[in-house]
Structure formats: C-alpha cells, structure tokens
Amino acid sequence: HSFFYIFLTARTLNPEDPDFEIRHRFAAIGDKTMLLNVRRIVQGGVRPALILMAIEDISDRPAVQKELEEKSSMFDALLDSLPEVILFTDVNHVVKKVSRYAKELLKLPPERLMKADETKRIDLLEIHWPNGERLEPDELPLSKAIITGESFTDFEITVKHPDDVPKYFSIAAGPVRDDQGNIVGAVGAWRDITERKRAQESLAIERGRLRATLESIPDEMWIADKQGNIIFRSSGSIQDSLGKCDWPDVASALRELEILNSDGTRRAPEDAMLRRA
Image 1 (cartoon, rainbow, N blue to C red):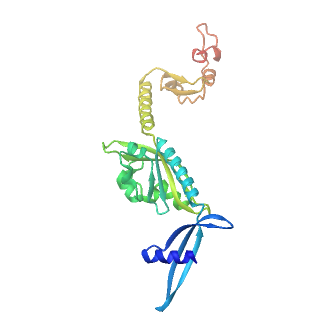
Image 2 (image 1 turned 45 degrees about the vertical axis):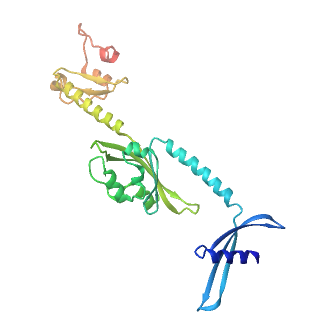
C-alpha cells in the first residue's frame, strides 16, 4: 500500500509522468529498484475512477545501461578509426550514424548526411555510375540490402567533389538484423579507390601508346613472356609473306618457320635467340 499512496502523491504533483521509480528493501529478496506505472481508468465519467497499476523490477537496469554505454563507446572508437566512410541506415533508408572520415573523404560534414534518405544522399553527393549516369534511389547498395536482405560488394560509384573532380568509391553493404532475424537497417562501407582508378587509366593509356608505337615499326617484332607464350607480334614482313600467323608460343613459331643457320643447316628451336633469352 505504501507504493500505491506514494505514487498517487507523485501523480498529483506531475500528472504528465505516469512512471515513478523507487527503491525498497524487501525482507526476503533484499534491496530492489521498482518502476511503478499507474493510469486512471474513467468509466463513463463515473467517480471514483479505477486505477491500473503495474510494477516492474528494474534493479539490473543500471548495470545493463552501463554495459551498453561501454559497448557503444568501443564501437564509436572502432568506427572513428576506420579510414572509410561508414553509414548506418534504418529500415526506412534514413541515415542514423556516420563515421568521422566521411567529412574528409566526401568533403561534407557528417551532420548533413544525418537523417538523409536515398534521394537526398544522391543529391548531396551527386552520386553517379562510373559511366556518368545518375543512380536511382533503389540502386544504392544500402537500399538494395534492406529491400533484398542480401549483401553487396565491389559496387563502384563516383561522387562529385566541390572542386568538380569526381572521386571513385567501392561500396560494400549488407542488412542489419535483430535477434529475431528481422531487417532493421543496413550498414555500408565506402572505400576510396580514386588513386587506383587513376593508375588503371594511366596504365591503359601507356599500353595503348606502346602498342601504337610497336605497330608502327615495319620490322618483325615479337614480345613473349617468360614461359615462351607470344603476347605481342607486330605486323612485320613475316606476316606479309606468310599471311596470318597465330602461333601460341615461340617454340611453335620457330618449328614452323624452319630458321636456318648461316651454313644452311636447320637451327633448333632451343638455339633461337628469343627462345634462349
């Protein structure tokens, strides 16, 4: 009865708050923290009204809250140490958490991404496919993870920076599930691959220049790997005279060409300079 009257006094002082927390020492079970909840039920305006009271033992709640706070702090420290953009969204595709590297890599304060859905993120970051086409909201990996329940990796996009120079990102995303297996959101990691893409583009250009240079040489020229496989052959005099020459390796070419020594004897394939090299 003491619980009941204490709570009614609190209700009188603060009718907007139906919860009241107290500590009590029980003879059998010791000190306990109890959460009382009382609601007045009025039946057709008849007084006195009925009172519905619920009592919950919350003695372990402080310990649980402390453990959650410690885990949250550890998670935040881990999140901030990763040199990638990490985004967490809820089941409605709205951003709920952003790693601090988002500011450095995206040149955008994380606060501007918070509470942003797919459409707003696309507009803020100017997200496109590598070929320049704009992504649709349901094509974002985070959205696809929530819709399909599947994980996605090596998903390449471009993000336009304030200096108008696009940056390339490889995205991995997957669904977040609760203890019952229900999807409650998604997590995505954006890795900056701009330098790698620039290097690939430069390498492709240099390969093109090398091939064009080699093709312009009128002499016969072969390039082989260390196993003897022919990886390049110029359009020289041998092809002009013999037609299409599609030998797979140096040994096959030397056998078919029957290369002769200066004295007219046939040179063994293993004695050819390219083969010996």
